[in-house]
Amino acid sequence: MTTLYLQAATPFAPANPLGARAGAAVFVALYRLLAGLVRAASVRPARPERDLRAVRELAWRHLETDPRFAADLLASADHHERMLGRV
Image (cartoon, rainbow, N blue to C red; front, side, top):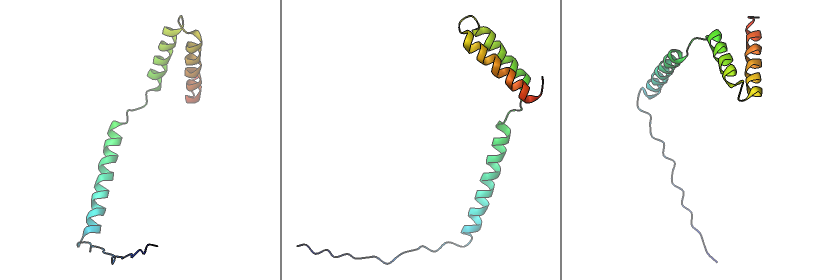
């Protein structure tokens, strides 16, 4: 039979330096601000007319080789146009 001896160390918690919470809050606020600015700058404005035209051109290019795919593209472009209220 074996005897095990377990020794538990006393918990150690380092003291936070003065202003650590405030500094962390300022850092998080600045990070969120910069992330929001980058996200806002990277979003392009919606141009549904140009996108719909591009989808229809793609459909017409594939009409000879894959007519079902072309029909799906044309149907989805029509559906999207109806959702936008343009028809």
